[in-house]
Length: 152
Image (cartoon, rainbow, N blue to C red; front, side, top):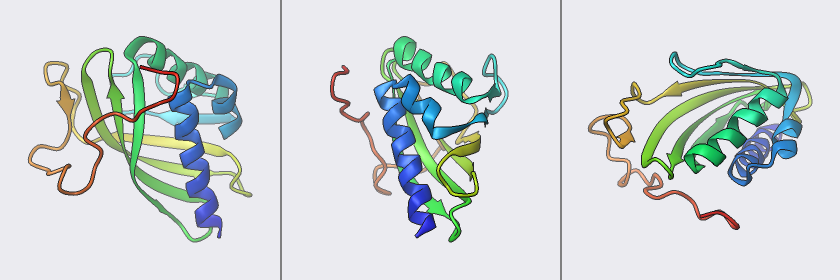
């Protein structure tokens, strides 16, 4: 049951990212929650729920960011999970794929930590950053960004 709770929290978090809902994002994290990224992202890691929320709202406003979840695996106790995701930067024509490792608080109601790993080094000259030779379409991955009500 707690594995399902972890999955539901991750899905809610992604809904809040897509909606650019700052308060909704803050509510997904412990106040000191941290989001780690591979090298190259200015200001990373994002420390604190407000910093995480501000970062994703900024991405929506500046990159037209939208996200999809491709896979989720959670531990039976729900304290940790890993996902595969796609980050669609629709305003700049980029796609980034990767994984994230989640750590939750004791009652699996808030995210304590996210560690992001990109599928490949970010290459700004390549409009789709993904694993070379991996057949995303055949494996059932999203090939278009999601429809988000109220957003282009």
